[in-house]
Length: 170
Image (cartoon, rainbow, N blue to C red; front, side):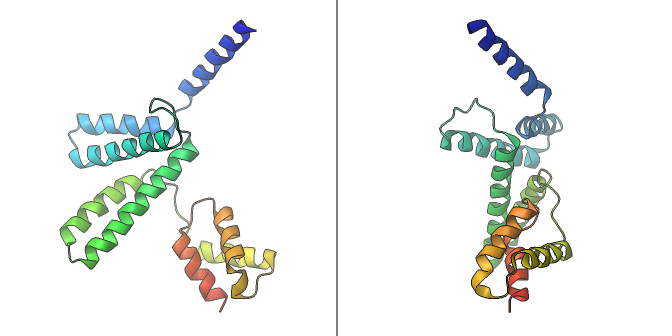
């Protein structure tokens, strides 16, 4: 039984090394940015790597463990949302300089996010799901939004979905 388990472990490690995980890609990009002396990019990628490690610790794993791509994508989306919120706050406080720094970081983080759906594509998706679920009034708004978010697979912004659902369910 023991040789079988060790063979499985070896195969697992080989599979992991052949698949370039998103976290490993970001680490490689950080190394390249360090070599090219792009300090802003290095800082942003370091903060992403730190967020990955924090997620591992929060899920009761060691920082040496590996985050899967779907887990890493959740962390990246969270970090992008933080930057968007910071930009809004800085603009509200008339701090254009700090907002510009956050915009630069957001642009770097968005390179690792999947391409977002256009507003028209989201509208078509909402109408399609509304027809499928037979939603006609605002009391079923939560059901419609949940289905649209699930069907968009993270490629549509929740605020945009809410805005379109509000327009449709008047």
